[in-house]
Length: 291
View: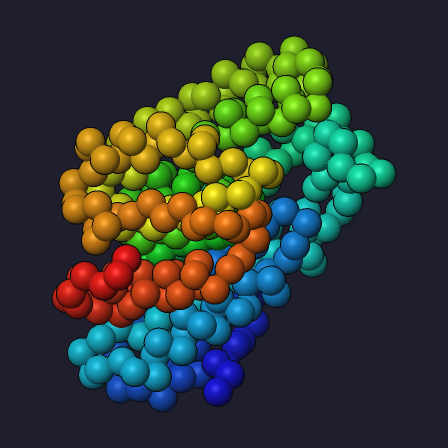
């Protein structure tokens, strides 16, 4: 059965909340967890509806002591209802489009999306639940696909309230991604990745491994992804294997999905749902599964 969805207006955004009608039928004060689901470049928030529905369907089997999960989506900057300049969403050379500001445009969208998640966490409970004497949310999570995956890394690293993260075909090393694309396109870094911008991004992404070392993070890449290559997450994963405070495979996991490119696949959906069940509904009280 389809999960309910409700659009509310918060900080100038059309925010869609999945699973709220079902939550409102539960006893007052029932624990809740909220997962943000961030879409990819050239998409809009409707692309995250299938995963939002799949995650919220966990609520159908929740025990009385479990948290109810809500999923929240919104359009990223310059996408969907917020589109103001279509060319800015394209790469340097992509089909008939040529965007010389690709690196700066996408970074701005990634960074703004991550910050928007934080800004929503600041106020969202009031808009969803009304005035409360305390927080009802036991877990905040963030997940995203492609550009939304890049933003998920940033949001989870920079907001201590986010304890669960699922970046899908995303990358933590934005500069490595841009440098690779420049090389493939035979374009000049001096022109398309100017030093002041490069230095700013380098500073902004510094120590992401340290900032993610206590997060329940499920990183998924496609083994055949040529757009966002899995290899660029290698340094982060190797560092987390050394410094993460939890157990690999249970508290955090890197999943390289074989024979999958830059796309969703059933294994990614299934793994995301299992991760949310463990860390957002049960919050670590279930035994380790095949993850």
